[in-house]
Image (cartoon, rainbow, N blue to C red; front, side, top):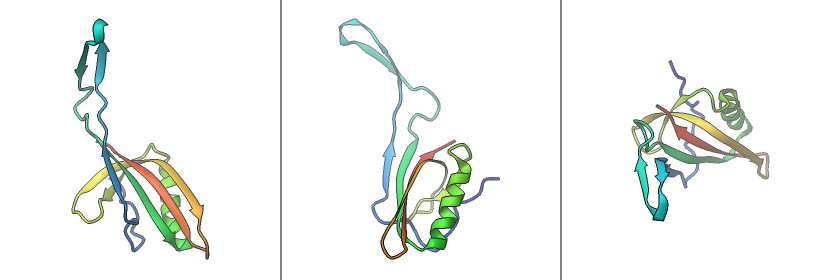
Length: 114
């Protein structure tokens, strides 16, 4: 059973960006002709740029530890903010910075998995 992303008492900061990535197999022929075909059964997996700004140290530690432990290998469940949709995702990147006044910012990329 997959774990949910921990609830730290707040949603990500506004500006959540969702992308749909298409990655077909492309065979190129002479004269600019090409043939395209879907690679698999799920060619349109989504990615999200997710960030939390001005986290308290305990909120930051909970999220940062959870995401680092998964190392883009182990999936988890995430409820997309302001929707009822729950998706299986991998955290593919993680960056942080220390803002002023002892708050921290955390930015991530989530990739949908099936």
